[in-house]
Image (tube, rainbow, N blue to C red; front, side):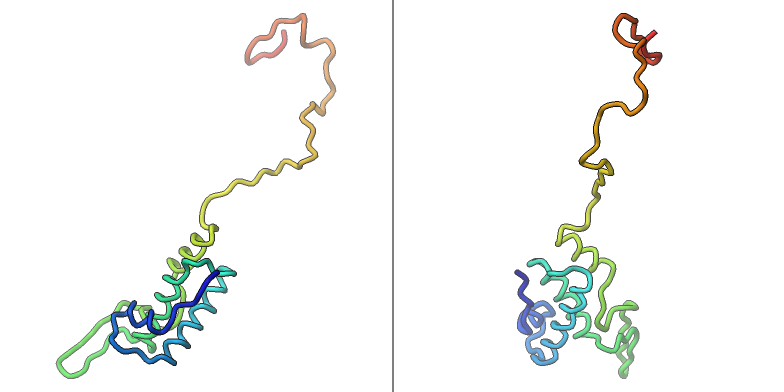
Length: 137
């Protein structure tokens, strides 16, 4: 059963000595809601994805990509802020839920009968010689 991470865990994840508890709780709840749009119920290991989503939004809520304050400037990758799921987040959630791999579909109905459905030639078969690729000759 999935247990949402706490504000303290988000602070540890981000390496912050202090964290705004109410804001962190809101972002975690919203990250859980986003994750549940992909997989429901969330698997136990989805905590990593939820922390990643909430952490992005916590450190860069306005999605700032370039910022200059005095002599300092910072450039962040585009799409590095706000509350959203990346393709990798969605893929991870699906894989954690066991929905990420290849699969096989057998279209044969359970009531299928293996006996031939075409007219059987009573002149073919035993008594004749079988040649691979040519059949009974």
